[in-house]
Structure formats: structure tokens, C-alpha cells
Length: 499
Ligand code: F6P
Image 1 (tube, rainbow, N blue to C red):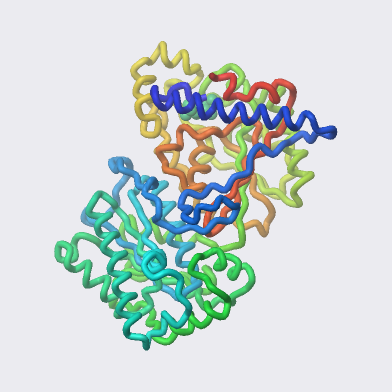
Image 2 (cartoon, helix red, strand yellow):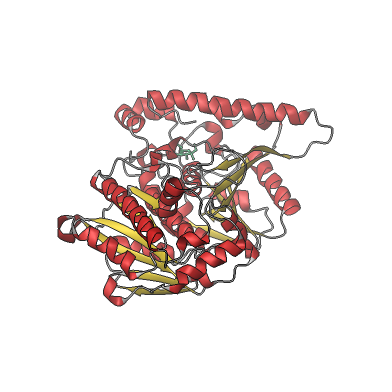
């Protein structure tokens, strides 16, 4: 579909799309041999996890933040900067083991990267594991002076790497560790004072008091995925050592947000400024719930899709309507309760119309990419009529803004309220199905699977396919289901047509 990509992207798109189409076709042919055919088929099930370090590609893989530099955006002249006095920001986590610090650090890092900030998280636990391997609770006994010195050195190493990252163009570094003593926090503060008299970088502390939450089975299961976990009793002993000298953040230590009562109570202190405020508004919407699942789905085929036109507000074709019915049938047969978010556009609303939803919400923010003056044209027509525009978009599809329209970056900014609501969402109210548009879903998909935003405009989000994403602390699992509409749909995916 992305015929407006540049040459290399076009080629990449050609092959990746080609492979996907082939995979779809192969899946279809395989299913055809089965006696009783369902009207929907699982296309692929993958674990989208970009920070994987364990190497074994099972569904639940252990991950570490910051282990992959591919996420680092190098182009920084994109959106608002928002740093006080043009400086950098160091976000430092504080809290007992098992207080969801890594959950917060990973989420914040992903959110900021998605917003084009060059952000990287540094896990102190990972530095320790790399240096001394897995250690039992006794290693953390504060009375063991030798180990305390070694642990201090490990923090210093992580902090140096964080500063190096900031010096080399990084904008926000996140230090993910316990940092439960004043001594430890002074170590960090004093080191920062040596950088341009403390002007190089501001600190935002995020303290979680959720380490005292009951170690119920769900939390335990999540902890078990950490390479730092040995056993329940060892974990409890280690936590007890940290409790011995835990000093909560004081008002004399700088701006902080404190999370307590299992993410229902937040205390803010001196968190003014654009970027700290943005981070805080994100953090207060986080919920460490059990696996969260969201379905993403494009509207059924529209008249404009069938004619290859961009934009517009056309209704569904006959095939689009069949898809709408198939989707409703699939959801009613597989889900007890469904909530639907749609855009305000006709094709999206018509697709959702047949679904027996508990609640349906229309979002203007979910509307399709505004293609401005190119609305109603095909890619071919755009190429002939606006060759300059066509070329510019091919050169930088992510940042290109249609005259009187939008760019993908504009779209990402527009989707921020949806992201905050997505973070607040839990599955207690049933499943969530988002029925929107190709460009919009590319942005949401990239956020949920933590992809580099440079990849956003080229992601494959085919028509008539339901994508289920299950997010966990340590990654995201993906399942694609194709809702079969008719023979045409089975044999010709939209991508195949556009090649
Ligand atoms: O063709 C369907 C569509 O959703 C258009 O309305 C939209 O402009 C386009 O896809 C976005 O895809 P791309 O960014 O690859 O042109």
C-alpha cells in the first residue's frame, strides 16, 4: 500500500508486504483444507518484544529496559522540546523491590520515545547482573560494607552511561533502581552537580510506595519473569533488607511524584515545567493490571478504498458491510463483553454498527490522517498533479505534512489523549476494540509494541484483520485474525492489489 514511500522504503515495503501477503495466502490455503472452516483465521501470533535479552523466543521472555539502542530517535527537531532552560532531564526511580518501578520506567520511556524524545532507560539491576550475576538476598544486607561499596560502584557506572547518553544527544535518561537511601540519592545529585554546575540536567524523582502491596499471585508471576528473581522467600528477605534503611523522598530533595495505594494516590512536589508535567500526567494514568488486551481493527472496505482514493468520508462497500457483520459475529461468539472506540468517520461508525457493544465511544482523535489538498485523489493522481509533494512525502513519510493536512507526527500528537485513556483501561469492563484507520492504527500499534517511530508509516495494518495486542510488563504479545469476507478477500489482500 505505501506507494508513496521512497525508493528504499518502497522496496522494503514491496518485499515485506509481499511476504505478508504470501503468508496470508499460505494461511488461507492451509485453512481451506480443513473440513469445517471458520469465518476467521489466526494469521500469526508473535511476541513483539524489542528489548529481549534472553534470546529464547518463547512467548514470555525476560526483558530489560535500555538494552536496545534502536529505539533512540536521532532526529530531534520534531516537536516541542519543553525542557526548562533547554537542559536535559534525568528521571530517577525510587522504591522497594517489586514496587512496579520497572513497569513505570518502561512505560515512561516508551511514551517519551513515541513522542519523539530521545529517551533511554538504564536498569541498575541489569548492570549488577552483568557484573556480579544473580545474587541471593544476603548480598543486599546493608551491614555488609564490602557489598555496599560494590553496589555503589554499579550505580555510578549506570549513571555515567546515562550522562554519556545525554551528552551525545539524548534528551531524557531514566535511572531504574531502588535508590531508597538518602546516601544513594545524594550520590546521584552530587554527580550531577559536577556537570555544568548542575545546570546540565534536571532531576525528576518518581517514587513508588507500592512495594508494600500484597505479593498476590499476579504480582508474583510478573516478578518471576525477572532475571533478578530467585524465589518468593528470597525476594521477601531482600525486601526486608531494603526496608531497614528506606528513607522516603523529602521535600528538600527536589521535584517528585510519589505513587501509593496501588496507583490510586499520587503526591506531587515541585513538578512544574512542560516535560515533568507531561510525564506526571502520563504516570497518573498508569495501572499495573494483569495482562491487558486491546483489539485494533481497520474499518471495512470503503468506497474510497475500493477506488484507491485517499481521505474522504465514504461509506462501506458490500464487502465492507460483510466484514462488519463478520466482525460482529466473531466478537459475539468469542467475547462476553465488548467496548468499542470508533472515529467519527462514516466508514468507522458503519463498521461498528453491527457489534453488540456494552459501550461505544466516538473519538475525533481517531479520525484518519488528514491528507489536506490531496483528499479525493489516488496516489497516482497525487504523483501527477503534485509531483513535489509526492517526492517530499517519499523522502520523509513520517514528518511530511500534506498541504492543509497532517503528518504522521501530527497524528501522534493528536493521539495522546487516546494513549492516556488506553493506559487507564483495564479489562474488567470487557474487551476493548478500536475501529479506526490505517495511519491511526499504525501509530497506536507502534506505541503498544514499542517500535521506533521511524517505522510507523510503513507498518502493515491490512483491511479485514483484527489485531489483538496483549501487553505485559515485559513485552507485548500479538495475534492477527483475518475475518474472511468472500473469495476476493481470501485471494487478494489489499496489499497484493497495491503491488
Ligand atoms: O488508503 C487508506 C488510507 O487510510 C488513507 O485514507 C490514508 O491517507 C492512507 O491510508 C494512509 O496510508 P499512507 O500513509 O501509507 O499513505
